[in-house]
Length: 208
Image 1: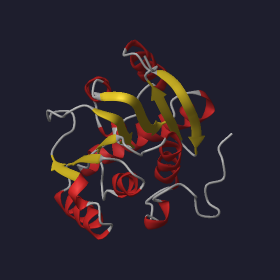
Image 2: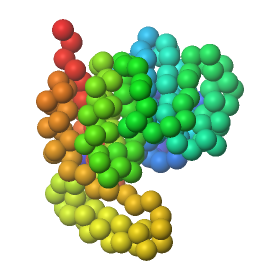
Image 3: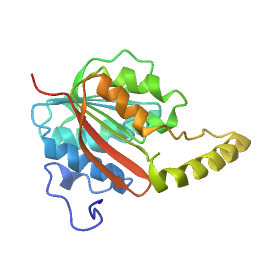
């Protein structure tokens, strides 16, 4: 059962500086990662947008954060957000495709509503999971159960409309398949929640 995330402000460190979340699912993902603890960690977010999660992680004690984003305007705002929060020296924001860039490993790797933007979701998943030392976190449209059935209808119709309009389409990938690939890569499911149409999953490598 998904928690009510629309009420009072979260107590997670760094959250107070980031009240203007673009969606409840992004806010929920941040809260769950903050619960694992950002302090001393390195965090990579592919598709970082305006940098809310990464700046929040740095304010909460992450030692460094790297954001990758295709939108140059969003990246510039992310940089400004980091500077205004006083953590700019610990943040790196790169313009490019996270499925193509050569990136360094980080403790946490985050993909929030990003895999669904790629036709080849498997490749992005495999490349990004290989960079995660401790935790891999993703939000993707749910493909299972009644919500998954509804998403398949909506995404099929939406894909046709997007193609006719010449717009980027959104893809529904099999969550079970993605979780099998993460398991093969050495991760186990730590937390899973559903919020609206979204699956929120955090996967950990066992400590050795």
